[in-house]
Image 1 (cartoon, rainbow, N blue to C red):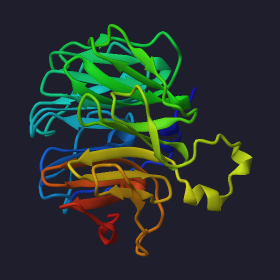
Image 2 (cartoon, helix red, strand yellow; image 1 turned 90 degrees about the vertical axis):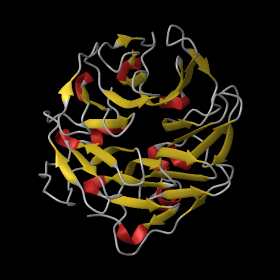
Image 3 (tube, rainbow, N blue to C red; image 1 turned 60 degrees about the horizontal axis):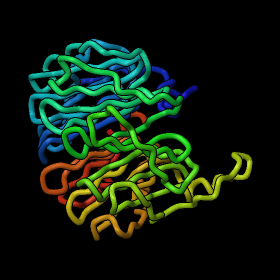
Image 4 (spheres, helix red, strand yellow; image 1 turned 90 degrees about the horizontal axis):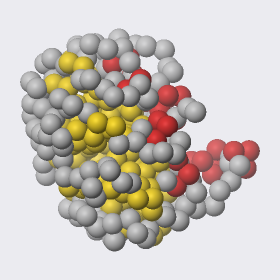
Length: 324
């Protein structure tokens, strides 16, 4: 069973140059402040910015495996996960990265840390791994069913929400001893999820789907996109452009961003209740975007194909500054 992430990882390698140039596909990003952030991607790519994305410096990850997700608890402590159960950790802001002992050889697609100790990573074949000591030990808390899990959002210590293929949503409130399957109301794959508290979460997926729950995942409302399941041969380019798959979503206060295929970026200015798609800049092509991050006062980045990075500055999407 292949994930869309592995399909995206198949491009030919391009070396990461010094400075701000990044040409590899980027799958993950994390920001801890308006100035400091990281990206990760194909062939073990990791790079850091200390000036809000104006310039980027390559870091040595020690692996050539694709890294699909990255998260930082603060300016020094971070983790990245990827192919074949890879888990990397840094304690010095990424100057050095070390492998942590992973209890799985399944691909890990998403990692989220609550603080410097508690984190959850999820991936292929229903795999879920949890740490309560910053990754010194990771324990398996996987599902019994075979389902691709694409994204996790940690809500509190012991609580997390997970989304995946065919509308899958699971939640735990006991550290993963039990995962309760929730009804999303859709049968399409969900790629990204973000919770801002125990009740309010958003999920995004195929055909520009954007879902919201205000009761911890018990019920979901469709804010954007189509829930109709269509065969691939029924979807032309025009329909695909109008309803691109969305891969990531973030909410910070009243400001929200979602991003995905064909250069799609959606924004919300009312705390994720309504969403509008931005018009793409004429200065860059229409790449796919795989992840995004917000920190500080609505600062961050949207990242994706061939090193493309769209900066976010005080809630403004810098479309004309896209790419390298």
